[in-house]
Length: 86
Image 1 (cartoon, rainbow, N blue to C red):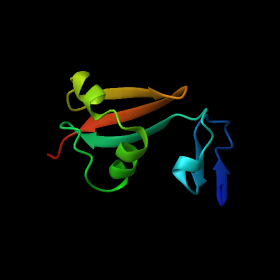
Image 2 (cartoon, helix red, strand yellow):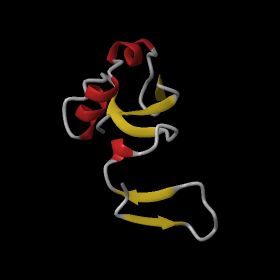
Image 3 (tube, rainbow, N blue to C red):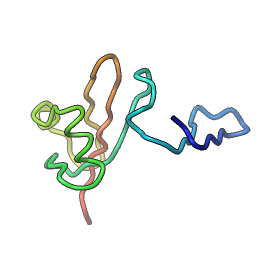
Image 4 (tube, helix red, strand yellow):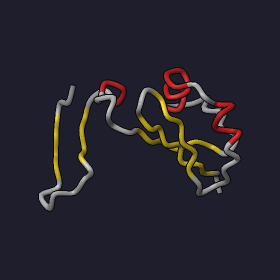
């Protein structure tokens, strides 16, 4: 999957990987930014919406800008970082 792997020499829990985000192990959590209205009609958000669905579930969480909505799919957590244009 990964074409490049660069780990923090200090042993950070964050690993930077180049490749197909959706090909990562199902034990990995995913996160991306969305607008407060959860439209997800541009960029990578479209792919998240197609793959994981749950728009109504996200809206029901009633998150505001700066908060995080979460879906659980097949044992994996998908984090939706809510933000607005300023």
